[in-house]
Length: 166
Image (tube, rainbow, N blue to C red; front, side):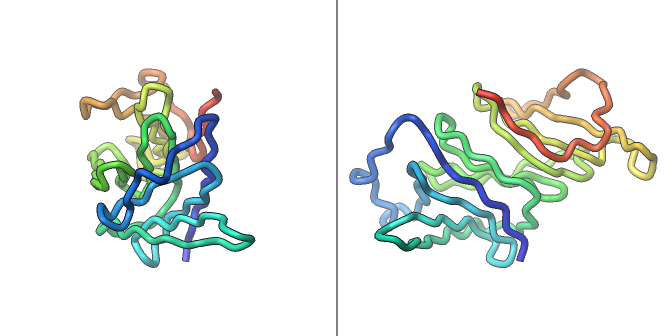
């Protein structure tokens, strides 16, 4: 089983009392939660510390997962999971799952949210599969569904890990 782990940390405290996860079927994330994407179960797993143990909650996404990267930003309230050729986005409030596919994606390696809730996608395959070095790209997925290529037509030489500086 391939699992990628992300710890959720935020300066603001989320109020869990007014959230009814079981009724809505949503996987809410609070400070200190540990989140992983499970390819074996095609789901998100949340590990929440409680009384010196971890309570595990599984949220099935209904999408085949081969996780390559995972990102969560509290202000966006969305979890993004990178697959080889698409990105699965889970909205923690509505419980909706969106799959982002584009013919330009060849080998997605990681995802990250920026401050404007745009999704950055590291694609190591680029547009020249079979050539070395590959013409990798960092794509920006905008909230309107459009794509921009970070750095114009700059080749990113196999980008594989993303992180956003605060």
